[in-house]
Length: 184
Image 1: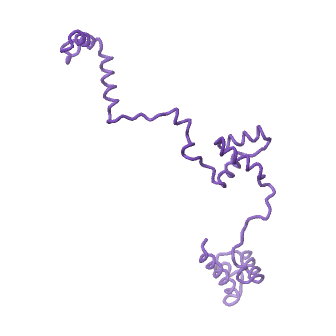
Image 2: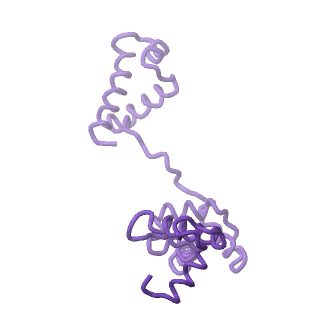
Image 3: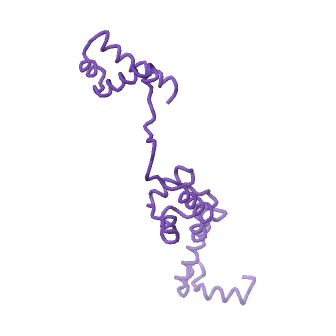
């Protein structure tokens, strides 16, 4: 949030507190009018009485202590496996369980990689095996392969049948004639 948005929130909260004192004198009616709960109003009131305008600012909701947070050495192992072996979250979780006796979920590994910005491999390391398996086929002119294939199929399926364009000869007979008489 920008600084102006934070200031706007503080002014709105102050206006709600003043509305009870100056206009309605009724907390429930004011809360209904502004669309907030009474618990929210009284929380703002306690903050304003304790710290003034600073008590109306948003505070961090982050807990002070996370007892179930992933240990630093496990995070280091995850980073090392990702950078040196380019393992995905599933392989990292299996590797840690098998060789280091560390139980961590696949989604937990992914969240750690995402938080550190390592959730995507560089383009040069992505899909390497697939690139070796599949190769895109391209020709210089469009339809080049198709016209050659059609001709090849026609020659194969009509190999022993007389052809009108070859003066009633089969393609085999025509090739033998060309081999004997190279000028025709």
